[in-house]
Length: 402
Image: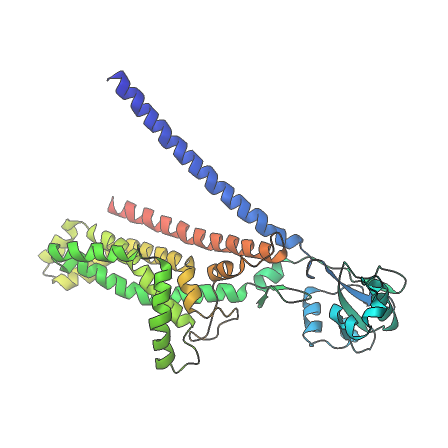
C-alpha cells in the first residue's frame, strides 16, 4: 500500500477516534454538572434563603417541619397546640408589618432601630411567628429564638403535590404535578399518533407504488425538520380555538391540545421507523403466505405486522421520548398550570416547559435554580429509561431477523 495513503488513513482514523472521545467526555461532563447542580437542592433549608422564622422564647416549639410551616401560613394550622405548643392562636408577622406599627422616626433615619423594634414585637407576644430577613432580624436572646430548620428532603421533592417555587416563607418543590402532566400529554400523544403513523407506514411499505413512495416519504421526513415553535404557533392559532369551541371550554390551552401537537410532531419518527421495520420483513415470509392462499391484507396483518412488531414498538417508544422532551410547542398550548391533572381538558405543565419558563428568572445558585436542574436530572433519567428499552427492543428485532 502507498505509504502516503496509509498515513492519511491513520490520520483520518485518529481524527474519528478523537472526535468520539471528545464527544463522550463532553456528554459525561454535562451529566455530571447537571446532577451536581441539582443535588444541591437537598442541602438548602426549607425556609426561603436569606430569611428566618423567629419565636418568643416562652413558646415551647423549637422546630417546624416543611409541612407544618406550609399549613401555618396557609391558615390550615391556627393554634400552637397543634404543633406541640401552648393553646394559643398563632399570630403571623411579616417584615412589612413593622412599618404599620412604628413610624419612620421611631425606626430611625437609616432604620438603625429596626432590629430593636422587631425584637420588641416578638418579646411582647408569646404567640407570634415572625418571618424576617437576616439583614434586619433581631439577634437571638433570652426573649427571641430562631426556629431550627431542616433541609429540603427527597420525599418533599419526589412526592410533593405542589410546585410553587416563589412562595414564602417556604417554597414548594413538589414534582408530582409536573411528572403527571408530562406523562399524560406524552401518553395521549402516542395514543393518537401510533395508529395513524402505523397506517401511513403500512401504506408506504405495502400498498403505495414506488412513484408515490418516492413522493410521500421525503415529504413526511420533511416534517421532522420544522422548528417546534412553528408547531406551537400552529397549535396556538388553529388548534386552541377549535378545542375551546368544540369542547365548550373556558380556555383551549389544555393537555388534549398539547397531545394533538405532540402527536403531529411524533409522526415522522413513528412512520419512518415503522416503515423500515415493515420493509425488512423477509420476502420468503410474504411468498409463503401468498402460497397458502392468503390475500394481501391477510399477509399484512398476520405476517408482516407481527414480524415487524419489535420495530413498531421501538418506533412507539422513540415517539414517546420525542414527546417527553419537547419544550416550546407544549409551553405554548398546554396552559402551564402546575397542578395535578384530573382531566385531559385541563391545563397542565410538563417538566421541559417548566425548565424553559422559569430558569431565566431563578436566582443562580438558589434553591429554585437547583430544583430546575434537578428536574433536568429527572427528565434525563426518564428519557434514559426509554432509550434503554428502545435499544433492547432493537436488538431483539435484529436477532429475530438474523
